[in-house]
Length: 322
Image (tube, rainbow, N blue to C red; front, side, top):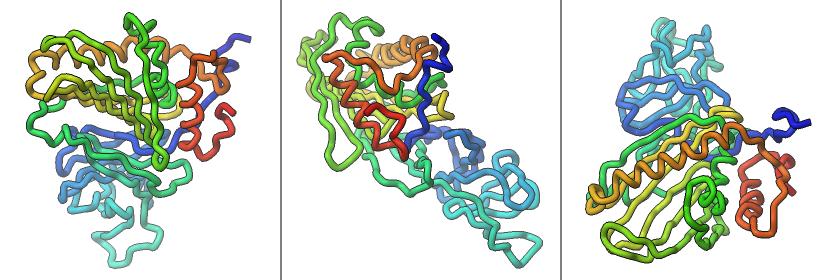
């Protein structure tokens, strides 16, 4: 029976680091309700400047911190009775009308980080602490590179399927209009959830003809940096995180930057080309089903390797391809 609910193999949520906001979207003292991983949370920036994420429902009488809550130092104050909860530990630190704090007055705190222009949360299906990290990229701190442009979109897709595009070079020809599929090389790191795909071809640019290399680095599912290198002392960078809202929808955020000597020559075209590429994929992602055991041909080498690599990000990988 050709029905989506019959054909579709539902994936759980993978473990890893996922972006929940652009850094520029959260000022000191800001409080925002957010929903990711099928859960509600509250995001706020403490007076120290550090972003914090907590479960949002007060253990007292259930008020949501994200609607009327207020930052107080490193805590968030409940809008209902002004109980204060530490942004790092989730414990209640102050009740204005009582000198005794109940032992169970605490909420879950989420491990957070801020780097590369994004605020990150560590998700683990079994609530285990972070098992790996990812690097800060030098381009974002380099004055010779442009202020990043941002782009974001919500998609009907699973994060494993959107990330799989990196390992599907053939689709760039048939979906995105590339004239041919360039040869690629993929290398998986032995001691981390990182891999790199490189492909090199001769390209004409406004600065001349060069051997250009597309370097795609991925850390976990949904976190990718794509660099275009080959022009001396110049470069382009796309950095993205795709975060599960639930197991059917994702929120994708991109930062795009280039060396200042390319801003007016290729910067706008770079931004337009990459964002157009996402829109090219939208219809396919929205209507496709996930095949846990796809029928692959002998040339689908990268896809087969990818399906094995993703197993490490799930607590239970029995649903994945053997």
